[in-house]
Image (cartoon, rainbow, N blue to C red; front, top):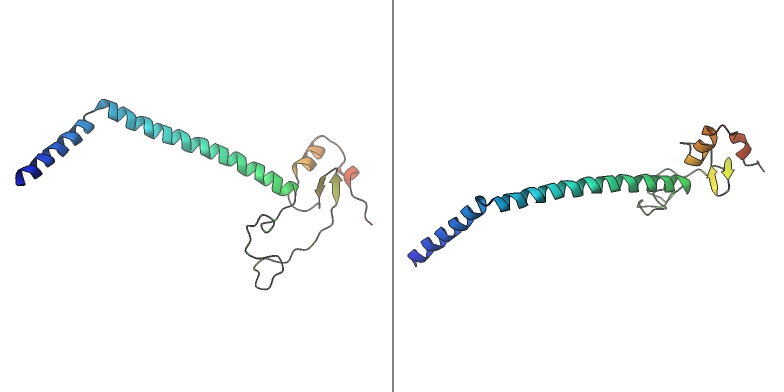
Length: 127
């Protein structure tokens, strides 16, 4: 039995030595690392693109964390840590695009201003 243990140890050592001194194995390990780096970089780029698109949609549709199911409680619920929402009337409209005039200008408003067009043409009449 003692002889069997020593033979197993020798066989294991030979296998380890063969892997350590195998140039093909080293090449494969390098390729694995390179592929992992490529995949991580690709994922980072895609995530950045997705985040930008999601942010645009949130602004376009005036969504809140609650609307997206990211808030534990509804606005105004007792015990809620969020402030109650104050409804603000729409100030500007261009078809389906709307803006209250508060906060960051949406892309469609920036495009109007950048084109030199008068934003006041898009004012929603007050009732």
